[in-house]
Image (cartoon, rainbow, N blue to C red; front, side, top):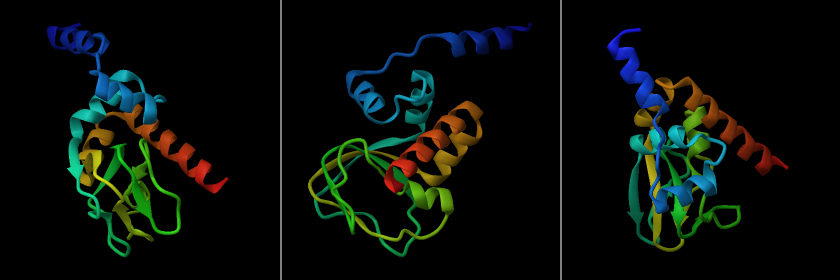
Length: 146
């Protein structure tokens, strides 16, 4: 084993600590992930603050990223209000097709946002993270359909 491999192994096994805010998001939406997987995903995203009335996803267009609502509420046409922990734009990310409905902030929102390219890059570089992401999306889709 060379020094590079030892350093990589050390970094991989080092415990990851989340701040209280990130830990809340982890528990709310990403508990099926390991803490390290979630931390890697967080690094690829950014926190954004969205004003009430702002459109997150516009029907008929392909969203440029995926949001998870950290706080606040959004309205999605034909569906109940989206609240903390809800994903927005994930189906269009998977299918690469235009959104069927618009999603609008019903009140000021805090979200974590991943641009499609950043999300694809982080998921492509980490097979375990990609598997956890796909599992989470499959579970959420199954809940919607039931």
